[in-house]
Image (cartoon, rainbow, N blue to C red; front, side):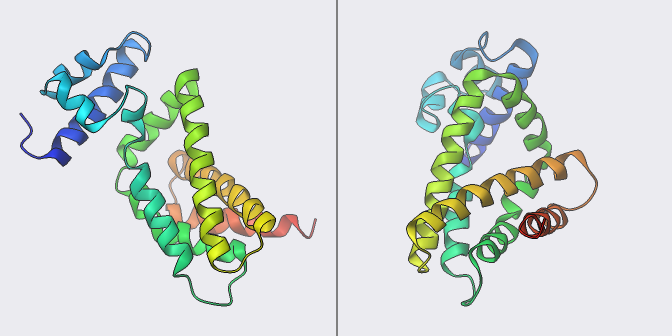
Length: 185
């Protein structure tokens, strides 16, 4: 049995990912996930409100890291530069979980209920980024546009990173450079 809450949470996430890949999301129960992780179902629900959310644990840590980096980025940066700075500084959250992230993204892409949750999480993160940009004085609509575009670029860079050999930082810099060149096309 896991002794710490963090260990139980990690085991639940891995058990869910493994079972979803083996049996499918719809045919897996929270009781089965808990049993595979070596905990009871009540422990599952102490950590996650439902079986979709188990694959999105860590999103709050990423959100907090991104908001912190946006609000503390050096003065004088353009909004896209602030976002690139924040994504580069926060990349460690993903890099530390690469072995989990790759099959997770594949599973999300194949499962409508998980795609729906992923889109909701993306909107939530974009809103948080936009609000952080507003605290830096970026006007409302520009903050929204920058946050949504920045999140799409981050997602693109993360997918490229998972499919390739270069570091996430390299993919982030390349993606944001490409985004900036769209203006000149």
